[in-house]
Image 1 (cartoon, rainbow, N blue to C red):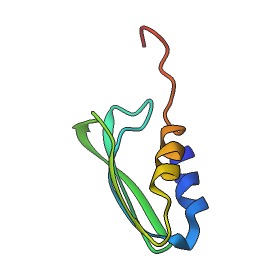
Image 2 (cartoon, rainbow, N blue to C red; image 1 turned 120 degrees about the vertical axis):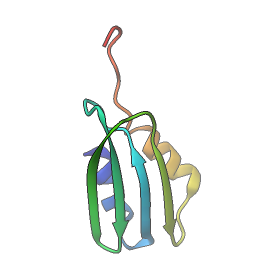
Image 3 (cartoon, helix red, strand yellow; image 1 turned 180 degrees about the horizontal axis):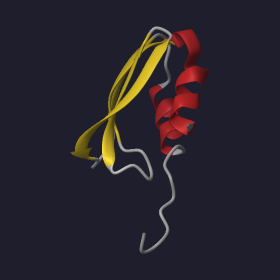
Image 4 (cartoon, helix red, strand yellow; image 1 turned 90 degrees about the vertical axis):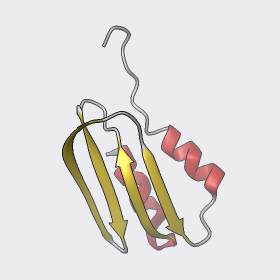
Length: 80
């Protein structure tokens, strides 16, 4: 949900985003895609390992976007 909220907050400045995401608590990798106002998140049977996203937009602040995405990370309890 935090990741999807970031995408919504970017509004019309975000033209497209596409890539693999590792969602906390989900063993499968997710494929996130946004084109215009349509966002989809689908999972396949491949184990999740990392997140790699490509953003295309107008006037996006790359450093601010990195900070916002970093804040979406889930804390993992020791031994979990």
